[in-house]
Length: 193
Image (cartoon, rainbow, N blue to C red; front, side, top):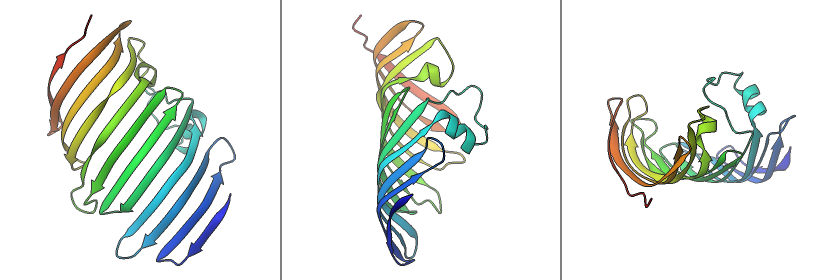
């Protein structure tokens, strides 16, 4: 690795940090870490790259057999805030497609509250879940929620394109919620075919 770390335990500046694992994983970032009343950060992730085989090594092969991770993944973006008020804008490019997450996470030490938008760009969902009937997905979902153990989440989704059974379906709108581990949703389809 290389880069420059300056400062104190209370606040550290990270300049051009580059770390590489012995295989195909690397991290390049700038920013600062601070430890005042709570731990915080202001990070610009220039490049976090890895591969399916590296992820299998890092997880000890503990991923479900029903999931096929992309052969390659590249993540970049920014994370800013502290463990009680954190914001992120992250971009993922992979061999199965791309995604962008803009969101916030608050109140992590109590009942977490989160919101954001996840945009999916031509992602090979069928390959990810090992189901040949499912094709690519393009769309976005906006969400507001609270809690992780028994989450309560409201969502609105727009599916621009979804492949299934060799067909491509377009213009699907869904809104609903997740409450007590049950999903309730309504939707509409305005496919021009």
